[in-house]
Amino acid sequence: MNTHSNAGLPKPLDSASAAQAEALLELARTAGGLRTWTLGGKELLPVVQGGMGVGVSAGGLAGAVAALGGVGTVSSVDLRRMHPDLMAQTAHLESGKEPDAKECIDAANLVALDREIRRARGIAQGRGLVAVNVMKALSAYEIYVRQALESGVDAVVVGAGLPLDLPEIAKDHPKTALIPILSDARGVQLIVRKWEKKGRLPDAIVIEHPRLAGGHLGAAKVADLQDGRFEFDQVIPQALEFFQSAGLEGKIPLIAAGGISNRDDLLRLQALGASAVQMGTAFAVTQECDASAAFKRVLAEALPEDIVEFISVAGLPARGVRTHWLEKYLRVEPKLKAVAHPKSRCNMAFDCLAHCGLRDGKAEMGQFCIDQQLAHAMEGDAQRGLFFRGAGTLPFGKEIRSVAELMWSMIGGCPPPALGQNGHLFPNESGALA
Image (cartoon, rainbow, N blue to C red; front, side, top):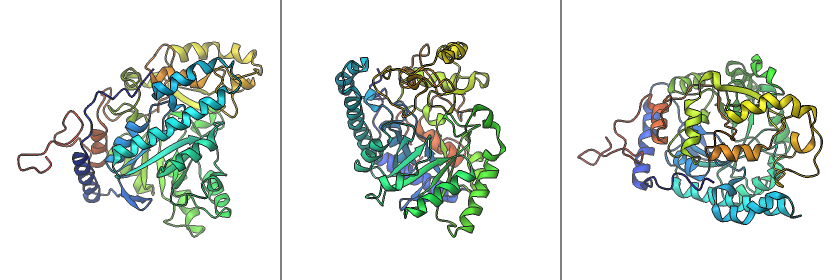
């Protein structure tokens, strides 16, 4: 079980983080063609770290990104696995013999979510923004959103479904940014129109490209991943045109997600009209990522031919690394689907998804326990884990680098002059930044 795998690394120094954040912002302001952006009243670097569960992007990673002036994102899914005391209280409930197993596991996950938000905010020290990603497809979607809001998160990001009810859930938290994840211009128009009737606009929208992103993808089936309507040069201009016609020009920033690995990608997408970019896998292989070192190696060492698309147990197309488990699952999937049938209860007594192919016996959906497989991946178990990954190349190839180096490469096009072992800049003899 992973218990904050980076606990042994040197702690970030607040003064050093602040100096780096200021240097990065100044570099972004002065670098040719690059723009900062504003969310929640703060000027930010145009880099957002995507939410990755189970326990891949928790408080450590999210806090490190926010501390440098970006948006760091905690994934809300099954965070109890990050906390030995919470796992000790709930691991035995996964047998499903206790009638209140789901309620107890949900309660532990809410405690863990609160802890990880506070952890991220503590690391960030008021810099950047800390967000929480919640999948609409989760059975505990609403209670996770409410917990994130009560814990004082800066933004709530929702994907894996249309969050039409998010404005109502967050009505008592007008200062918290609400950010849906969508894949095409039609979805953008639908969400904006529906939310307008509820008296709220999205504070930003993530435009995630299904052909390039990792994890669950915003398309109806695998064959749709290549559809031209998802291309950034189609979606972004169409969304901006809609904003202009609706009198919303300049009010809703767009965040492009999927396949982004360098500053040139960022410049190209800003030129199209995006305000920022979101990156997942690139942050998953940083030193500060909350998953195990073995997890990071699987992602960093995967070749293009190792990346495969399949239908998740959530009924959505997904993209991951063809590991031993996934190879075996895909080989026997037709047989599993042929005998799919409704189960009396969830295999793990967790009921993490509102609609689960395995539990509900839906032959058109995946037939495995996603929480269990993602937990194995977080622990670095390449034999049993499901390792979600984007389709693009990584900024540093197979190397595991720091969040600071990744941010510097995205903003300045190259690493900073000198980085210490904790990822901070070394000051020169005069005390100024190197």
